[in-house]
Image: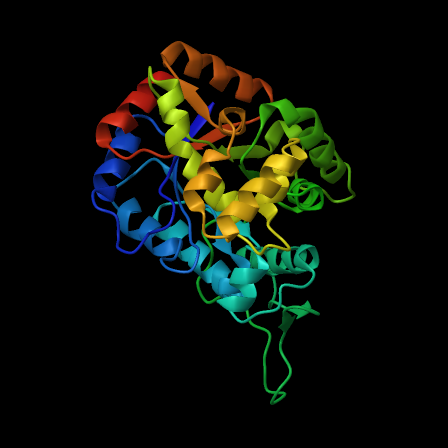
Length: 341
């Protein structure tokens, strides 16, 4: 099992001590560090800043939002980071959701699958640098209309790697199948090993499509997972319930919340409905209390060393190739590295 440190995105202020966490992750044998973005800090700058302290770990976005940048601009970010890191960049992409895409970026959310396919095609054209980059659209037309003076261009800077890995953040069946078809890896959130047969069916659909880039043998499945090493399992589960309530009840529109749909596929239909109603009514503590223990334990690994090792093996057997974990201290990074590597 490979191990990645998920730095996430910033809250109201930049987090303290992140550089030391990154140092500790490399020293502990972590394979990668990842940074995220929502509608505050971006995903690329922290990797360039803190990644400059490292020499071995891969530097990944988990995820960079499609609507935050045009495809060519995103490719510029990726090829720049790849050069600066000596070929260690992983470009993780995701569509986000309509609240952020339309409310923050001012872009339409329609046809996310088609937009993703077109976006990644343009990024790969930039990285390949075989010819001037063009796209017939309809979502990202290059050259664009307007003055009629637009010119198809190749990047001035020669990318370090034409095959820079692109991983796709995906939660639903069609998007997971798309990841297997056109990407090099799947960034999974709230993964449940119990549902591995369902995930594998989605992935196999993508692998079987004409022109698929990868097969199961060389495709990455990176699952974001809270790994909590503790003798107080019940207490740790209780502390994680507000996070579940936030994502199920507040990280998406009432009419369309992809995180809530993930848990509904696990069979928690009634629980999701109750949590969502309470959270959206402003009763956040009650929403957290409505999260059952098994809803936390199914998508996170919590317990003593023996339990954690057994669960990691179960996730690996289910098809996960990398765990993306969080840690709030240098000591905890070292503990996780020693336990899981």
